[in-house]
Structure formats: structure tokens, C-alpha cells
Image 1 (cartoon, rainbow, N blue to C red):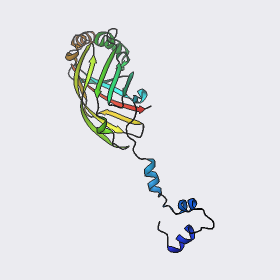
Image 2: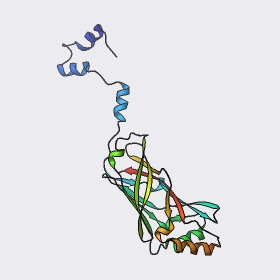
Image 3: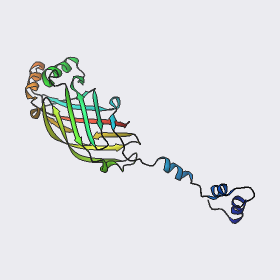
Image 4: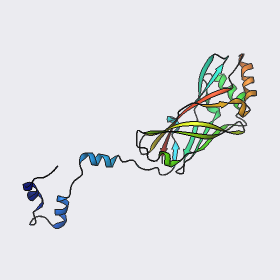
Length: 220
């Protein structure tokens, strides 16, 4: 707000009452409420490592049986991190598979994933921090990347389209912009699928499984 001449003299020119430092403090232009709020919410740059918030994250996959019935399943136990340099990793406990049917969970663990030999699936990829460091809270960026998936004793590179959203100074949300297709044949899972088909009395189980995810990361 601009001061008129009388206000200026009344406020600022009081040499008998104010010392020089106090005079400068009184006359210096003060930030407006909008400027103060803007400073308080300024977007910080990426700094430090980020850890997965497991109870706020989800990884799901779809199965198709008899070429007609589609079902959605998930894994409950996840862990992961993203380093300041952009090295991202995700570990999936295959024993935590949840299909909604206990006997089917057991069969997947024993016949398909063979978790006694291969208890984990591991995902790793490299992000460019420069591509997302300027995002402000509420903004997002879609990144087309390639991830390395280690599953059932084999490692393959799979394309991954990621939506990276900045929620606030400490939280980021990474979701699948498009489903990631995991092909059972690439990870020697066809034999396990056939065992599942036989024991369940099905005509067919699809070999390609779409995977989606919503992963919350927190700094510190």
C-alpha cells in the first residue's frame, strides 16, 4: 500500500524517538500477505532419498481365464526407494499374493511363482531427476522409461510409462500411466500356468498379465 506525504513523515521521520536501525526497519517495504504465502509454499528441489510408504501403495495384476473371465489380484508386501540420483527400486514379496481365494493364493505361491525358490520379484529403473525436479505440488509429468524386472530367476527389460506427481515437499506419487504387460513365457512361468489350469479345471489361463501400480514415496 502506498503512503501519502503526511503518513510518510509521521511514520518514518522520528529521529528523536527512533535510532537509525529502527528507522530503517520501520521504513522498509513489508511483504504482502500473498508474497508471504508464496514464499512459504515455494517448491523445494529434490534432495535426499525417498522411501516407499507401503500401506499407502498398491500393485495389482489381472488374470484372464477361459478367455472370458477377468479377475484382479494384488500383492500386499512391497518395499522400495528412489535415490537422489534417480536410482529407483521396488521389491515385491510374492508370498503376499492376494487373489481373494486362499486356496488359489497357495497354488500361485507353490505352482506358479515357486516362492520357496524365488520369493521376490525385483524392479529397477533409472530416472532423470532433472525431468521432475521443477515440478510444483499438484503438478505431474509422464515419463516413458524401461524397467528391469527380475522374476522367477530371470531378468528382462520391460517398457514402463510412469505418471510422476508431486504432492508436496516430501511426498511423490508414481502411478502406471498404462498397464505394464508381463508375459509368462519370458519368465518361464508357462509350466506353472499349465499346472494351475489343470488343478483348477480350466480350459485356459492367459499368458499375458497387465500390471498396474500406485506407489507413494516419502523423503526421510
